[in-house]
Image 1 (cartoon, rainbow, N blue to C red):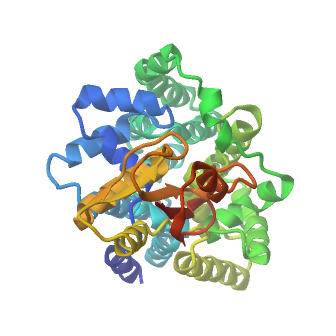
Image 2: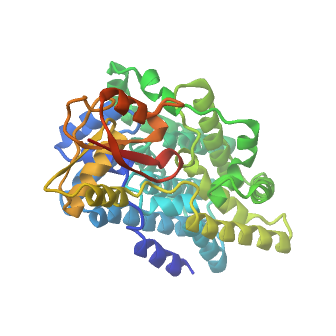
Image 3: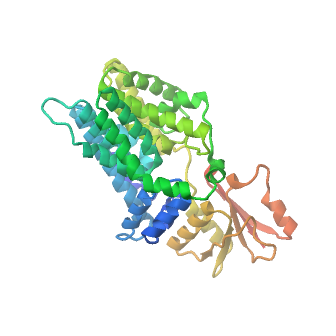
Length: 442
């Protein structure tokens, strides 16, 4: 079954078009290493670790959709291998290890990371290696020595350079080590990554960009219901199955609180991640309450559920079946489908044929995907950047806008008429935040 999921992931790498976040990774990594650092500093959302890896990847592959998507696929395979290693070090049986890997493979959030050109699959792989090393040092079996401290600390250092959300897991591991009365290990876990991330922290602090203003549009504040159903939502990949998410949250939590040191580690990893997401959303301008930012909680939550012995065999079987089935449904029907950029380009080219078609766009979310996919398709589409709408005397062409970026009630067609322009065609693709609209103006 795991092999079938891997084949399905490989076969669907190009099921969706690359969108802005993925293409920003390409843009950030397209120069030299100094440019990678500068691009990450301008972005401020991610440390430069993953951009540096993409920079190296681009030295050996062409930046085609398949070439780019192979990188997250390979790191996703590494994540599954790390999950298998975690199950082995937790002394699970072969069937239980296979079940744990299967649940991780069909998790909709983690499955998406297998084709998402960002650092999340690599982040989860590194954090899972660190959890494995921590569990080994907490409860090493009598016939085996604990893993070296470097196996614990080095992945955490690398993870901290990939994404800020390595830090809740770093904190969780330190807490578990302190509970187990291993203060030296806990100190190394906290201090070494903190020291080695200092150059990036200093560079961020010295930046003059208004972080609060730039990220204000992404702020979300979770309510009580979001907090209560968060574990189940992470496992099922969406919020539609309310009954399922409540059941998974309740029974999953029961499995976390069993009195064993390694379960303290797993519980702390889940609680710290969810708590950090909530605090960042409520107390700072960073909108960190989202699936990607909470994903470090998925593997420890799955591991705790498979480890559970308190629930009856029937209850555990039903719960784990629910997670597996819900994962498959979440993969087949994602909560938010990416924008079909190639469809939009084909629509524009068909409605306005010629040697070159112009599409005016005003934000990177639209500009980067249109330029990239037009280049990959060999479509003669020009995408000049404009502020707002094109000038009244601009040549005829498409105006492409993401509705989510417009003020409520704003109608571009009224503006076109005020400019004396005539709208001769229009299109709409995508759903929700990923929807894009276009108007052909003469």
